[in-house]
Image 1 (cartoon, rainbow, N blue to C red):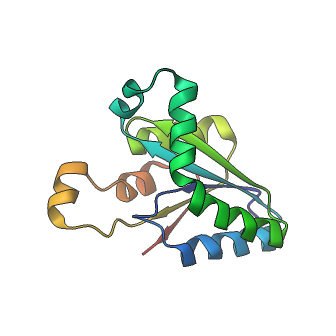
Image 2 (image 1 turned 90 degrees about the horizontal axis):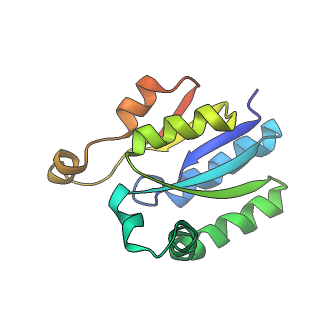
Amino acid sequence: MFTRILVDFDSRHLSDAATAQVLQIAKAAGASVTLLVIRAQLDNVMSKSEEDFIASVKASVAPQFGVIQRQADALGVPLALDVSWGDEVEQLLAVIARGGFDLLVIGKQHTGGLIHAIEGVAWKPAAVRAPIPVLIFP
């Protein structure tokens, strides 16, 4: 069964209901969950330091993370928040490789075709290239 679950944490791609389901899966499996926030490569350049960038990103997701943290605490699921920057797929694969994760959870983007054309669709190449099982939420 799964012991370390990595979640591509982006509210545009993963609903609150899906996140709650991931926590239920983690509880049933006795697994920990890490939420990974990935920002574009240039976003970190605008910060004074790497620490400032990470703190800023964590502050921006704090309201949503707080809700999830309370749910995880109620279920007894260990929960962590991590921040990375760069290409979404490459970052997911790098974190999987160094973190010992055994399940990747990713949501499909729910934006228009123009945004997909500009930003790309991360869930497809991530699902194909991930060396671990991938759970894709619609």
